[in-house]
Image (cartoon, rainbow, N blue to C red; front, top):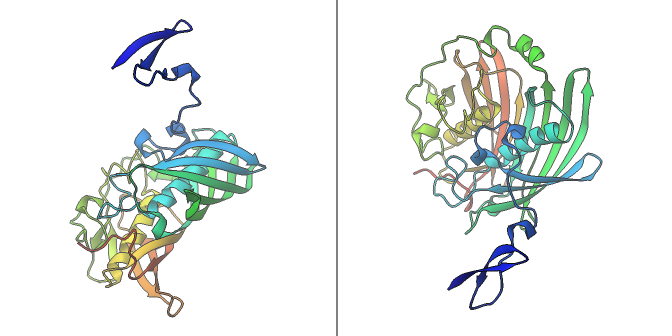
Length: 334
């Protein structure tokens, strides 16, 4: 039985059996919340994976974060593990947050992502009985203004329960809206262009996904080539309005292409290194090509090089690394 009692002129709920009053709200330590969604360029609070930040040295920061137990996209097909690509998205959010919250980049500036790379420990991606609490260390190199352009190189280590779950890097620039409009030209914000129609995607299991809705590739007449063709209404990949295919869509395309290329049912992508060369436009075909490249003999590792081309231009190049026979974190064919 719980009674309403009063202490120091403030109502406190007390357990009559235990005799110990509950802590008053204004006596609690700082409560956990996400960082502002605007700082990581997300529309939905559910897609914000960072919860706090403390500066520990010049250009070095300690951050906290959380991955939910059941994410609609960043979860393995069997529901038992976090998706390795979620590490890449978390690193991307760290870079954006630090730019705005620590280095004073205005929220209206646009981010140009040049590289994004991450490697995960699949054994540390299992989903437990509660959300996965993260401790992150971010080291910022050459974070500086050059005129009206801000740029830098970021290195992040992600730990859970003291163990390294993933690590990665990103190279980026931030430019004011006027510069972005000049860069984008006639395909920039507000352009009235007709995006490509959504075609029937490759089978979800072939791409390592559970749902056709999550597949970003459509088939071509070759087994090592696909059309980049995501659903533009996808609530995660297109979480907010965009005038081009976001970098994380290209990362996902690389992962799905690597999975589709290799016949091994137990191939599990664990890391991706991506360089972005040009914008992937929404209104023109972007072709994704994949080929296996040599890995260390006997390592149990497979490596796939993935490239995207559009209108004769290289859009991106990625190297996908994965293991064969992995027991954790895989998107097994279903």
